[in-house]
Image (cartoon, rainbow, N blue to C red; front, side, top):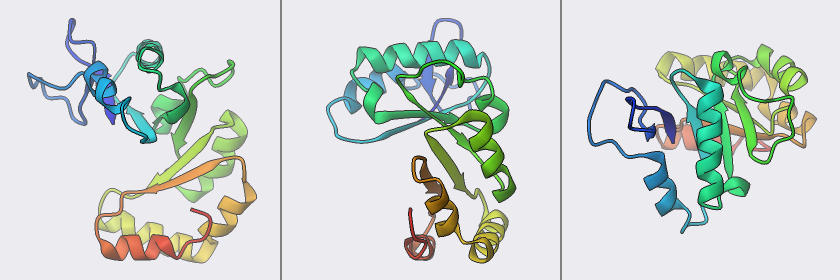
Length: 168
């Protein structure tokens, strides 16, 4: 789920690119439904006011009894504003866009999850090429206490390639 603050009285909304749309799903509504499932929730922060958004999202997770099944994450420029140094009752993750960032992100933040992936065909080619050389399985094995998630698999070829990478 991509979340951000909406307009002044909209609270936290579920939307990737907010362009002022109306009638968007609130995170409260989404979590009200999702609390009846057994799904693991990945909540990506977008937008601004990240410390406030963290508090609002955490409170909604508490309200719906979902702290234990959710991970809040973001790209590094937003994730650096997470309360990494405080005791946490909700898992935190960071998107490590490049292999060279992973060790630094782990040492700096001690995340519960590292997220990797691609957004287009060029990034997919780069990702698969680099990780074919560096061994994604070896990196995952090196950090057994950290969960690694790779997305986005756009087709069966992506799923097939990922299924051959050990440790995911």
